[in-house]
Length: 571
Picture 1: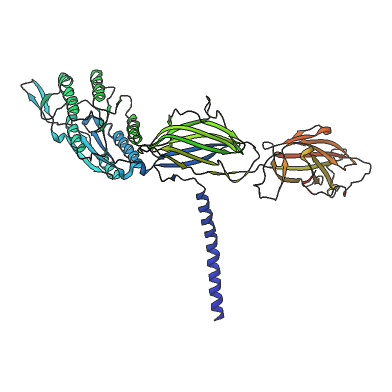
Picture 2: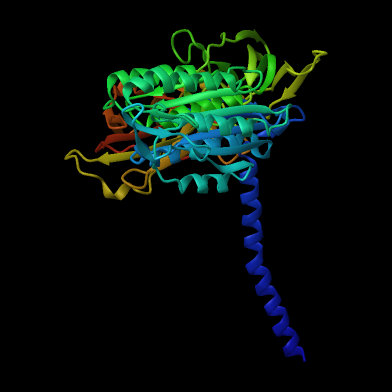
């Protein structure tokens, strides 16, 4: 029975030993994750994030981001995408599908279920016949030339899958597409925000329910004007009803006259923006992204926004950090919360107020749109020898603003997180070795039990003594480096002393029966009568080699004169 109990106890002990390291590691990982700044979702319409990036040499870039959240969307958004899938789109269809997918990703990331998307595709009737009346081939546009690919929904994956299945064929019946877009528009509740984004790679060559030749003459003088009239008659010109964007992509190989007609057509059938692409279909993606950005930005989250950041006294603002007098820069954010380097905003430089407790920066940001902005500036350590863990990069940071929909104009104030950084202490070493040689320059072997003392004299910075045996193991001093006024109260590591940065003189003590041949520091021979070196954060690993010639006459070593051990400080 006793043996049985012992086995049980051993098994329990083994289980505990295996589990404890896992628990410790898991806790450490959680602690590490918690140090990574996360977006702060406020109770108002804005999410905030402040970060500090180490640029090296005691300099840090501060980023203050602010963007809208789901509470920012006051009105639901409905978007009708109208896509040309005529036969001329075969080559460009992969780019179109990718661009539409990117557009949908942007809308999803910003609006989520608060936006619904409907997709219409259109081409044209391929049935042509000879008209004795016109003496030319004619074609009649049909309602079926435009198809409802997706009704309004927020299943973005399903919408993208259906768009990916599109095949290019047929002509271009833009009027049929406009008619179906109008029918879809009338399904949207009156209090929703409404958008239509139309894409085509050709000018219209058919009209609904009319047999019209599609020769150059009839396209220019009948079909295009009739389609433009139809656009106006559907009420698409009224921005209070719908925001209508149009995109035209016409090949450079197209007849120049037709291409110019196409540009005029695209310029006409919109009320919010027309995009005309001729150089490269790859630009289509940036066009769709720009339209998505416009839709997102129509939801303003702040008016008369003022941003304040207070920097603690151990840091200072780097003025003109970005050149051309810019202490700060402001970028728009993409829908994924990352900065858009192509969208540098014109915002006045911050007002900087200095005091004994630190520096305060104040920006007047004005209006901030839903996609948000990123405000950046740089700070640096006042004392390059300062160090510590979890050092806050600011005392406080907040943004205050008006809610654009608040008729009472009550100001709202929201606080940013305070990022903390680990600033490594500046460390250094002094490695001392001594060579004792005879008159032939050869090392003397029978002196390893002897000890010599070397003084590193820093004047008012203090004196440090190191003991060394010749022709043997070198002596090593490890230490932290500080300036005369460096705050070292954060350093809890008492295993090493502090040395003050500056100049130190090397002198030997008690070597009465030796002649000094040379003193080298980091391989450079110094003046024997004034052997000095500079210790600082950049020149922090010092290697000293002292070479002596042993005299033939007897002398003595004052072994007991200096009792101080390695690295002891004497005032």
